[in-house]
Image 1: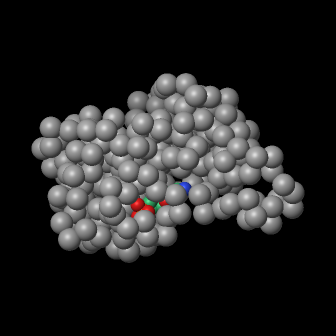
Image 2: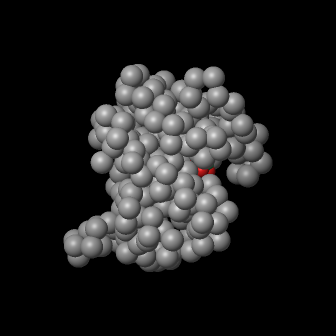
Amino acid sequence: MSDTGNAGAAERLFVALDLPAAAEARDLAARLAPLGVGLKVGLELFTAEGPALVRELAAAAPLFLDLKYHDIPETVARAVRAAARLGAAVANLHVAGGEAMVRRAVAARDEAAAAGGGAPALIGVTVLTSLEGDDLRGVWGTDLAGGASEHARRLAGLARAWGLDGVVASAREAAAIRSDCGPGFLIVTPGIRPAGAAPGDQKRVLTPAAALRAGASHLVVGRPVTRAADPLSACRDMLAEMAAGA
Ligand code: C5P
C-alpha cells in the first residue's frame, strides 16, 4: 500500500540499497515501507549480509536481486532457482553470457514458477554504462559497430529473442529498445536524478519523468534517496515527479 496516492509510480520504482550492512538496509526499508516502492539489493549488501537478509526484505517489498549472473549455463540456472527461493521479484544476468546460459536461466525460472513457489522476472544486463567505445575495444580487441549504444540495443534484441522479460538499460537506449522490443518488455533504467540533483558518478542522468517518457518501464534510484537527509520525503517527491511526468 502506498501513502502517496502514487501507487502506480511506486510499482515502477526500485530504491537501490547500496549500503554496507543489514542494520542500515533494514532501517531504510522500514522508512520507505509506507510508500510501497521496490528495493534493490546489489553486490555489496549481498556479499556483506547474504541471502537471509534478502529473504527478509523480499517478504516486505518487491525485491530486485541485482547480482548480474554471468557463468556457465548450469551454474546460472542453479543460481536462478536459488533466487526464486529467496522470493526475489526480479533478478538479472549478463546477456553476454550467451544463448545457452540465458535460455537455461529462463527454463529454470519457468520450472520454479510452475512448481508454485513464485519466481522472478529475469532481465538482461546489456552493456554496463561505465563502459564506452574505447573500453569495449580494449576488451574485445575490435570495434563494435555503432559503439556502446548500438551494441546495447543489439543485446536487448537477443535478450528478447532468448526469452528474457526485459533489460537493464540507460535512458539513452530506452527509446530504441522500446521500439525494437515492444510494449510488454521491461526496461529498467538507472541513472535517475530528480530535477536539480547532483549526478554523482553517473555520466548520463535523466529526470524520472524524462526516463519514463523515453520508454523505461521501471526506474532504479540510489543516492538521491539513500543519502537524502529525509529519504522518505525524497522518495515521495520522486514518485510525484514520476506520476506528473509519465
Ligand atoms: O546512486 P545511484 O542512483 O547512481 O544508483 C544507481 C544504482 O543503479 C546503483 O545500484 C548501480 O549499481 C545501479 N546501476 C547503474 N548503472 C547500471 C546498472 C546498474 O547505476 N548500468
